[in-house]
Length: 175
Image (tube, rainbow, N blue to C red; front, side, top):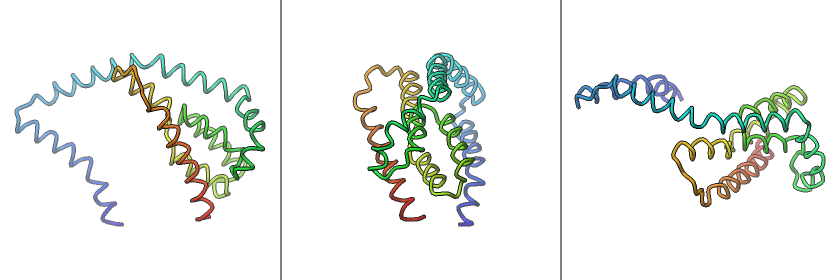
């Protein structure tokens, strides 16, 4: 374990100096390349900013309106049959759009039930096992100029479902 901590402390400086050393050996203008990459990065941010704002506003409206709580109450008979706490359904749904909004809901769960409760542990594992599908697709596909996503959404939804199921199983086995 100490070896992993030791390596993790020095890996970033090593990579930094490796890139600088390689640039010096190949006589690449390192700073000019850095500036060029930073300019391209700002262009990408400007291009995807409207999409990000739209996602954040949509999630904020759903959360503030109480629509997520209503949905969890409506689907409670189904989630109970699947042995999944209905209180966590809004977090699973919101996580697909925004990790920061899901973290806000996570804090609400922690305040109400506690971080060491069954729900606190389960939601922590769920958030660690799932991805912000729509955010990631919007950002990366827009940045790369991808128009046809093929099976990405279906695969990501299946992966999220698998991560959520695995989280419930693991939480029940370990805790």
